[in-house]
Image 1: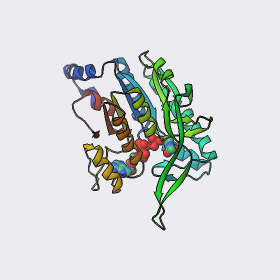
Image 2: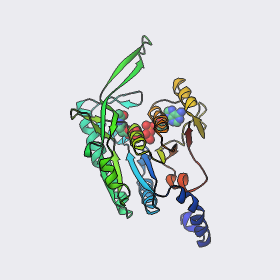
Image 3: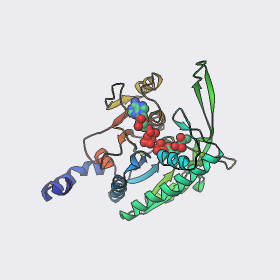
Image 4: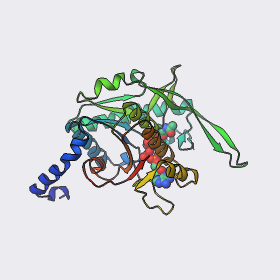
Length: 298
Ligand SMILES: Nc1ncnc2c1ncn2[C@@H]1O[C@H](COP(=O)(O)OP(=O)(O)O)[C@@H](O)[C@H]1O
Ligand SMILES: CC(=O)N[C@@H](CCC(=O)OP(=O)(O)O)C(=O)O
């Protein structure tokens, strides 16, 4: 018997009642939820996540899901014998890699998540940034210190894009109509090139354009950790920048924290990094007083 089924009917009623002010706070609001590839690892948790997204929709919240799939892309590339490297948390994407990235993100992962949401009674619509010209991107560039000379150099990331413009026409047809957009982080350039976009950055661009009430980034760690691996519950923008500069925040956490900063600057109401492997992480964050991960604030 699970812990949940041991709760008495009275406690269940109490819990629902206590959620009312939270539900009212988010009534008719748009919440962007980024579901990271690492958090998707267990099918059971992924199905619970899907159910929670349907619950949000049922309580008059407008959820927009952006998913990642880094580990799943890595597994497919490995099966095909294609080597892959990262620079500043971004996958260096050549012509062979972009094909696989699109196949895994817009194909298998997107449709799996759509399936889970629909099985839970929702009406999910799986799209990527290319649909309806939703997200157009420019080629991304990053500076990295050369390990030998320590001199900063521009790294060629290949077909990696930085969102330049988000066209909300298509999303506005879905939001508020009981449909749940589920977005894979691919974009096109003005010339029609497909770009691989880091899912955090993609989610930040979409949340910023929508002026979302909340952006939740679900990952596989409890939030931003300090050097002794302790959770930092709250982080100002300036402290976050310091932790990136001194290397406390590294790898995939860099685009996550940079996205939080960008989203706040674009007028998103609140941004938080939480552990997506925790059962019902989204409900805990939105419908209880207990904040779980790292809240980044101005
Ligand atoms: N200071 C930090 N706090 C937490 N995680 C960090 C930190 N620095 C680097 N990381 C790494 O960032 C990872 C999360 O990013 P990523 O692997 O891209 O996850 P996701 O697939 O959810 O987007 C963590 O698993 C951890 O290895
Ligand atoms: C440019 C870039 O790095 N794109 C990512 C897109 C997927 C992603 O971001 O997935 P997670 O959220 O699971 O990390 C990649 O190729 O892995």
